[in-house]
Image 1 (cartoon, rainbow, N blue to C red):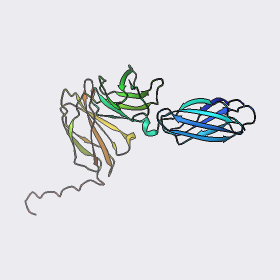
Image 2: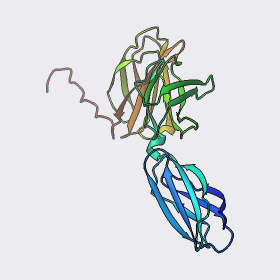
Image 3: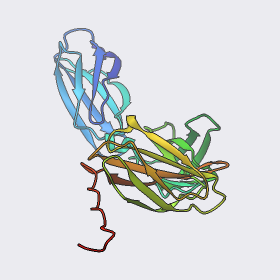
Length: 287
């Protein structure tokens, strides 16, 4: 009478994992597999025929550490238990974090709470284009924080790990982008549509604007993107050589010494054909 050996867990999902072991010696009638959550009162058990040395534990909770024991049952007595541990994966919803309230230098990050006794969360953020990684320690009862002292117009990779007494939990990940310090132009107006042109007008951007970039493309088709650059005192432009009866997406950016503003966006549709010419005026005044 001896215990099974070499407990191996594999194929971990958010609600199950597989367990396998090396057979116990002698004539084993069956194996009893038991598991219990180290985060709650949750328990489960299965019996497996004596010639089988694997099973799947299912119906489990996500992100939960389980203690597993396998006992070989003989005719008159049971072996000592073979034990091990495994943590289920995080659910799809739990993996995501949410970014909101973005400014030039800050953004708020919110995540799904992890189960069990979280001592704290560790948030790390790094600029996508490379740069210094910053780590924050957040109390285990909190599920949001504000990232501060960020660079404007920069996208950050963000990872949050729940930290337990002796182990690191499963990551939550996302990205966030800070706003531009340069203010966009306002009040986009489109007018005078013809078969192959229309006019775009805007109110100037505040600050030391060096000019404006106007981009336009057929709606839903970013590949045919075109752009025009105009001076700082211009606030209107006619877009020409467009396709007839086509909806266009337009964006106007303020251009500054240190970068560009967020876009001011709008759309307009060209006509199927040009408007008819007005009839000539009779100089004699007769109708």
